[in-house]
Length: 427
Image (cartoon, rainbow, N blue to C red; front, side, top):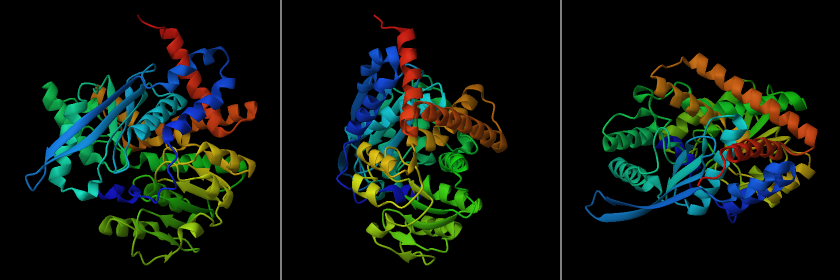
């Protein structure tokens, strides 16, 4: 599970309850929805919440119980779609908020999915591979009543990876009596996974940054970039930034905070993190304090760890031009306001990190048709969907004189609530 170590155990700055942040973001959109605001309450109530007990026999023969969740926030535009998180801080409140952001993200990108999310409250580093397999399979069996290729399609998130998805797909398939490759995305390619899926979220973060930079006159080439979180999102985004001429001057993961004003050798850092499970002890940069990390002068700041990291205090201190949200919900609404006053552009999670779910959509379509595309096709289609969504959201933000986040929420809420209205209430 090494690719996700870096996202675990952040020093949490009094974690704002994520669901409260989501509700506030929804409330801010109400004045922009016209007659559709009549349906807004829909988005403040998850459609379905499943809380499950996940018992396993541990390697020492003892029986242990863990708490698992699957939340389907909204299914008006299609089946649920959203990741599964294994992390010691997973709570129902967090999973609800993450499911809500998936509803918005899928609608903002025009993908035919609703929003869902899942999680199990464990620290995956405390378990053997065999125990993680048992936890995953038991959790999948417990939520099997609400997932399926045309009902709700999980994917990897913090603390889970393609192996987790292989176990989930196998468990579901055994239980329904046939191979159902489309029940999850983010699978190994050999099991119907998509080329380009592993890199998709990080690549999308880069595309969003590039599009923002082009409009603000902040070229990627030569730009200084700071990245918080060095897992599947932050690590790949950092690598693609560097390949395009940017200097990644600082990185933070759960164990270490490091900086090098001349630019960090990202491939070497990735190799180190894979070998040691962390950036700790990497020689290509100097340790810096947490406070200094949040005050480094840069053109692009990429929070790619957990939610609630950009607090009002940190928003006052940040010295960057553009924030590109690789994580879900990293910026609190109060911090958003401060950044807007300080003229720091925020490219929100529901746009910036949507590359992952976009390629998950491609994977799901390929599984249904049993016909697979080349990596070039995948990347070209990802580029085209992301750029089109970015353009529409940017234009609306200019027209309505609102933030990019509010514009993304306006477009998404209009799509979700129009679907709700057209479908009507039954019975």
